[in-house]
Image (cartoon, rainbow, N blue to C red; front, side, top):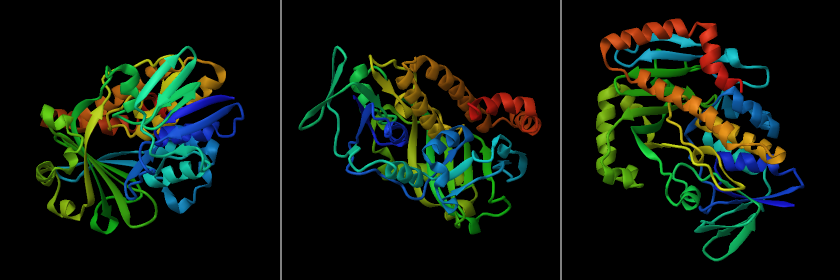
Length: 380
């Protein structure tokens, strides 16, 4: 029996463990540095059909309907006048059992965790050293060490596991943006369709509002262009600093209406860090999720790619296939689209904005373009 050690109990690590749990040829253990799986109850994620198809392999379709939502369209708006530009029918990529889905991130984590036995996850385990001796991999923790045949690093953007195996040669970089997460009641939003995803475009800022289920709360996520100095970028608790919080709130208040600003609840800020390059790990060591490559957040593919990457790794281990190069090519394509989206969403020049809006109206109804731009991602 081969031993697989997974560092990090996030979406990618938990999903991968679910895939392996029924295979008697492998023993899976997840090592999580925190004392429990942290779930931020109110915040949402979007899952496109490529990831829903893979989640259904472990029973996601049994999740109660009231805990998720299936929006049919993305409605595009301009922030400055709240006028609708056009809409994109994302339900065209759906099948009967695989539909574009939004839900609370906590619900997905709970589903993934509950599918595993109590003995799979080891909490309060922060890895300090990783050693290689021929085909054996040794993980050193505070009080003990373990050996494994395969090591899966899935501990996020600021991956300690990745830092250890790369000797700190592969660090994320600041994306010159701050993500603003919040909740908002349906009763406080007017002139939008609460059944759809609403995407508002503005100068150096865009935000998205979407339902998570059938209750009264909607998810709010904004991406604000914002510069940080080197000291601020190095401060991993910057989002707790009062001066930073007030500065972002002041900027946000200038970007959105006063009525919308006052209605935002449970606001949290996250400076956005992304990967600069790819790192090819040593023998029998693999990176997944944000540890593999942290995408810029303007294509709503973060969670979906974590799931997709874990499934590809599962298949690669079982069939002794190349994982890194195939995965790298796909992530490059998705990252380029995400970067382009952010550029287009944040345009400020009136002429370029007009051209963008005209292009959106045409392209969102162009079947050939949609199959190329979205279909290549959603139909993997």
